[in-house]
Length: 81
Image (cartoon, rainbow, N blue to C red; front, side):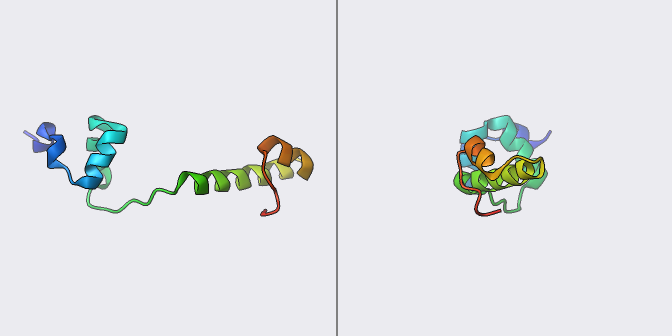
């Protein structure tokens, strides 16, 4: 018998409870099994969006789109390529 099969919300620390709240019980258990005991840094959404926009802009420019077209499609500045 694996004790984790009987885990309750109150058995978790604050971080574990946050994961449970966001992802649910099963995903929390899978994450604990995969990386339990380690620290995971998740980027802030606005930083991740900016990184993706920069990558998409570089790809679009490499495909031959003009900077103005890239700006229009991404609704963003392209100055930081």
